[in-house]
Amino acid sequence: MGIQTRYDEGDVSYWRELSFVKIIVYLLPVSFLAMASRIWLGLLEDHLLIAAFDLVFYLVLVGALFQRRLTIGFKKIFVTVMFYVFALVTLLIQGAEGPGLLYFTCTCTFTVFLFKGNRIYYFLLANFIIFISLTLVIYHRLIPTPLLQHFTPISWLNHTSTLLFINLVTLILIQRTIRRLEKIIVRESELQGQLEDEALEIAELNNKLRESEDYYRYLFASNPSPMWVYDTSTLHFLQVNDAALRLYGYTREEFMQLTLEDLRPQNDMKQSLRMIGSYRKNQKSFKGNMIHSKKNKRTFHVEVRSNPIEVNGKTGLLVLATDITERVKYVTSIEAQNNRLKHIAWIQSHKVRAPLARVMSLSSLIAGMQDGEERSEILDYLIVSADELNEIIVDIIKQAEQE
Image (cartoon, rainbow, N blue to C red; front, top):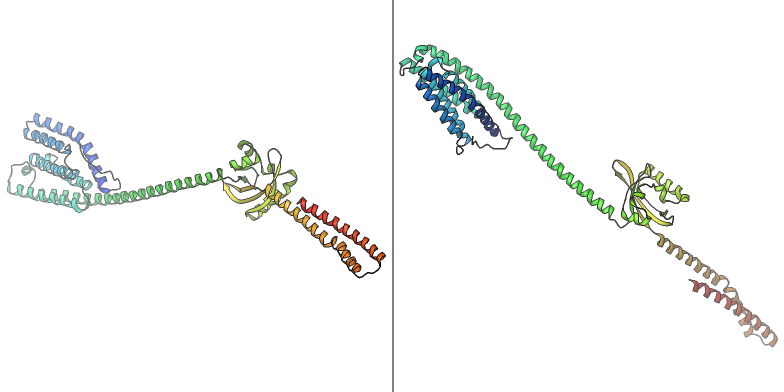
C-alpha cells in the first residue's frame, strides 16, 4: 500500500497507524466484494448513478491508499472524508433504505481508532452539522431525495438525535478503553526498555566478569610460582598451574588424580592434617614451611602460603608453594659455621688461656732467678707450655680453615 510506518512499538502513534493499516488491509477485499455486488445490482435495476458513484468512489479510494508519496496522516483524513462523502451521497440517493445512516455512525466510531485526543468529537460535530443540514433539506424540500418520503423534519430529528446519542456514548466508551490500552502500551514499552537496559547491563557485567575470570585464570596458569587449589573436604586437587607440574614432575592428568597426602612424606602427614584441621576451625590463611615429595620420591623443603577460595561451589584453599631447599641448606650451613666458631671461641677462652698463663708466670720467674739449675728447669717447663700453646693454635687454625 505504500504506507510508511514508524517502528517504535512503544509509541502510541505507531499503534494507531498500525491499526489503520490493518483495518485497510482487511477492508479493501471486503469492500471490493460489497462494491461489486452494489454495482451489479445497480446495473440490473437501472440505478446507473449509484453504480457509477460506487465505482468512482472505490477507484479513488484505492488509488489514494496506494500512493507512496502520501503520508499516512493524510491518508487517514482522506479515508475518513471519503466515507463521510459516501455516507452522505448514499443517504441522499437511497434514503432510509440505503446504508447511509449506518455509514455515518460507523465512520464516526472508526475515527476513535485513528485519531487521538479530543479530535474525534470534531467528527461527531460533523455528524450533527450534516444531520441538521439534512433537516433543513427535508423541511424546505431543497433536493429531491427519498428522505422526503421516509421522514418528516420531526421524525428525522428524533431518529438522528438517537443515533447521535448512541454515537456519543460509543465514542466515550471506546475512547476510555483505548486510553487505558495506550497507558498499558506505554507502560509495557517502558518496562521493555528497562528490561532491555537491564539485559544490556547484565550482558556488560557478564562480559566484564568473563574478562576478569580469564585474566585471573591467566595469572594463575602462567604464574612462575607453583600454585594449586585443593578441596579442604576431600583433599583432592581442583586446579594446578604449569609451574607446580614442573616442580613436582607430574603431568596434569596425574596431578589431578592425587590428593594433598600424596605430596607429603608419610612420616610428615600429621603436620598437614593439623594444618588442615586448624584451617577448618578458623577459616584463615596459612603460612609455614613443610617438606614435600616429588614424583621421583625426592623430598625438598617448601614454604607454603594458602588462602581460602571458592571454586565451582566448593570451598578450597589456594596454595602458593615456594621451593626453599637451597635456602634451608644455606641456613643450615650458616648455623653449623656459627657452632664451629663458637667452639673456636670456647677453645680460645679456655684451652689457650691455661698454657698462656703458665708461659707468662714462668717468664716472670725466670726474670727474677739467679740460680742456673732452677732457671734451666723453669725453661724446660716454659718450652713444654709453649709447645702446648702451639698445638692449640695449630688446631684452631685447622678448624678455621675448614670454614
